[in-house]
Amino acid sequence: MIEYSSTSHDKDVPDNFIYLTEVIPKVRFDLRYYSDDNFIGQPIPGYHSNVMIVTLQAALALKKVQLELAYSNFSLKLFDAYRPQSAVDYFIRWANDPEDERMKEQYYPNVDKGELIPRGFIAEQSSHSRGSTVDLTIISNDNGSELDMGTPFDLFDQKSWPSDTTVSVQQRANRQLLRSVMSKHGFIGLEEEWWHFTLRDEPYPDRYFDFPVK
Image (cartoon, rainbow, N blue to C red):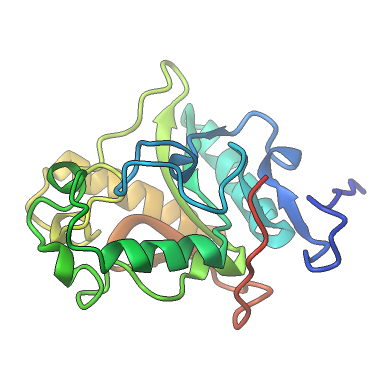
């Protein structure tokens, strides 16, 4: 039986939080909140390394997804996994600052910034902080290109809803492929974001963690 090590010896970090690459060594990821390429436009506090951390349960479920996609020459690509509560708190502070709209055109062109919290695009608590939620898409193994999902990751718009009918038939099919394979292996999708999935039987449904990603 394969054993996986904890990401940290810190007593406040649960033993079964691990780096996703321990379970899926060649998984592709682009930790957007570690970079400038996100809806705020700068690295987010709490993200100190370009690594993906999840609970062991979520990692093992994602491995099953990855193996199934491989039969069709596809792979997963992740944008975010475990998210510190301090990062979520930073999102709230940013959302309440009307002066900083540098990324509006790219990430929320059709929504007033003051509506991001009331309309639920940004929340005071995120399932990501429980360790078993991921933001991801599907890529082709031939060239690494992302399947066209109709909108980019983190676009705050109704067009990002999996049920949106304004995207093309192929884009809806791509969203359905992602949703069906994730659901098959134990994840529940969010109705407002095609990229967001939470493990159905997550080990910490009521606990929000705040250790850094490093």
